[in-house]
Amino acid sequence: MALWDPRIEEMPQEDLRKMQYKLLKSLAYRLYSFSPFYHDRMKEQNVHPDDIRELADVKKLPFMFKRDLRDNYPDRIFTATQDELVRYHVSSGTTGKPTVVGYTQKDLDLWTTSLARGLTSIGLGRGDVIQVSYGYGLFTGGLGMHYGAERIGATVLPTSVGNTERQIELMQDLGATAIACTPSYLLHMGEVAEKMGMSIRKDTRLRTGILGAEPWTEKMRVRIEDWLGIKAYDIYGTSELSGPMFTECSEQNGFHVWSDLALVEIIDPKTEEPLEPGESGEVTITILQKEALPMIRYRIGDIAAMDDAVCACGRTNPRIHRIQGRVDDMLIIRGINVFPSQVEHALMAIPEVGQHFQIVVERKGALDDMLVRVELKKESFSDKITDLMKIRQNVEHRLRNSLNVNADVELVEPGSLPRFEGKSKKVIDKRSL
Ligand code: DLL
Image 1 (cartoon, rainbow, N blue to C red):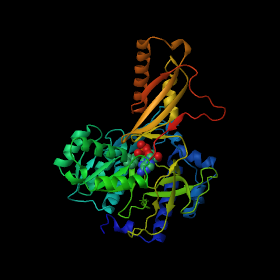
Image 2: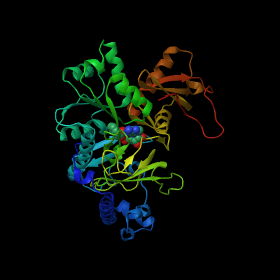
Image 3: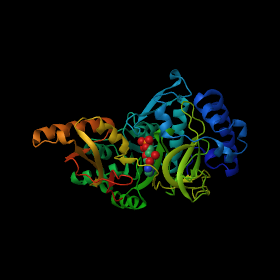
Image 4: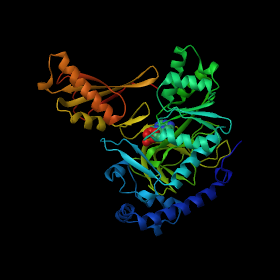
């Protein structure tokens, strides 16, 4: 079994915990001394870095949420100056205000190392051609995977998203052995390939999928593997913590979270108390060595269980099992995060639009499809088709600009959408995975 970094990957668990304690303590001191944001947070929580006397004391430290990044847009909580940064990534937030993450060279190196370990653990390396069909640009998927794949000596085919027929031709002509993309995009590729009169299973060298950025299930894994003749591995991460970071190993039984890079806690989202391995709760991660934007106890909002047993692959670092859902209402449409509040924010800026809307998400073929039903104001509702078409185009355009994903829009009469007495249900998610 190939290991990228045997010292860490096979380190006895007691030593892993000692290492994490040291890293956590020095992180707490650094942030208390140099970050006004964390200094204030720790004071509010009445905790001083001296109070961190063992690893479990992590629970004395304050939590961090996505809204902390948004409220401090764009870079007010960075702990590196702009001239120390070598990259930005930007992702959408709940109200249309994005979150920005800056990276120093060391941050990029550690992110890349994390992926190099993961890709090696699923048997990839020199000689492989890895097609990266995650989006390149502000999204972390494309560039993140790209650097990881180069680091292990594989050849990268940076196709990014879209232009699917050409992607399939290149996959075949250049002999891609692995593809990194969302599971739904790979399914779409399989369908397009069939329409082109070919089969990914028979006509390409593809044998590995590195699939993530959106929820998917074991059932879906089986379907993908059987249909396309590949092994499909789950990959997990979030832009605030770097991007795609943790992959399953050859055992396909949870993402390894490298202990020198990250400390995982699974907490009960209501009581905020840590849960035991095997119990499902909110994934909360501390990134131990990040320079530009350190994150302590970041509440990602994903629900999963942790497993700290030594893996059958021999790696000692703990695993997070498949993500089961979210504690908030974030939707993931074709790999892009969409909050209903973001839709509301965009819609409410349009004068013709009334107060009520409904989001319907479906899977059409392999791809997610989002329909937004929008009630118009009485005075804007017209019998003239041309007027309505103009409004519809405008609404579609505004949604696309703010969500970075296409939404179909259906304009409906004032008063026609359901009203609720308790919490409203704005989202109908018909995707059966
Ligand atoms: O999606 C980073 C990434 C890129 C991960 C490529 C994997 C592959 P964000 O856009 O910030 O970052 O979205 C992060 O997506 O909190 C989860 O809710 C969801 N998510 C990501 N990977 C998985 C997965 C990237 N494997 C949010 N299973 C996370 C389920 C996932 N959900």
